[in-house]
Length: 128
Image (tube, rainbow, N blue to C red; front, top):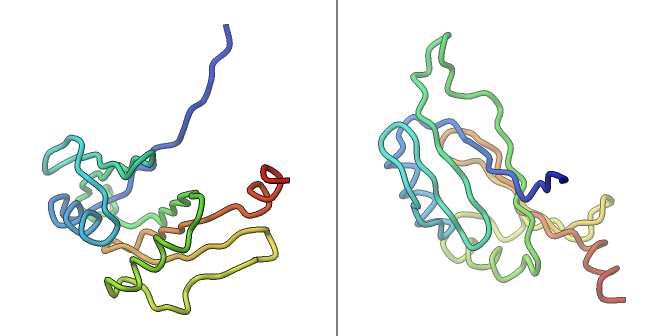
């Protein structure tokens, strides 16, 4: 029997779980799926993120340089919705990158880097 790996679920550090759940809901459309003030999960269609509270001490640092890359199909409508909300500037969408993507990125309230990516090379292969 073979193990099938299905997805990744990034766990992002947070100083305030309730505040961050609200931010992700308001700005990205995530919905809380479980949790409390120490650990929580949220979902947007097929994407799941978890938040974990950290004390921001030397033994429990808050910011560790977390990065999340969320892969999507048809990036522009979602990008445009974030521009309309004022989350992003309209010049942040990089189109036709040298590595075969359309993408944009931003930082959340805890300086986690969030990138939304459309793999255009894979999309082109599937349609040809």
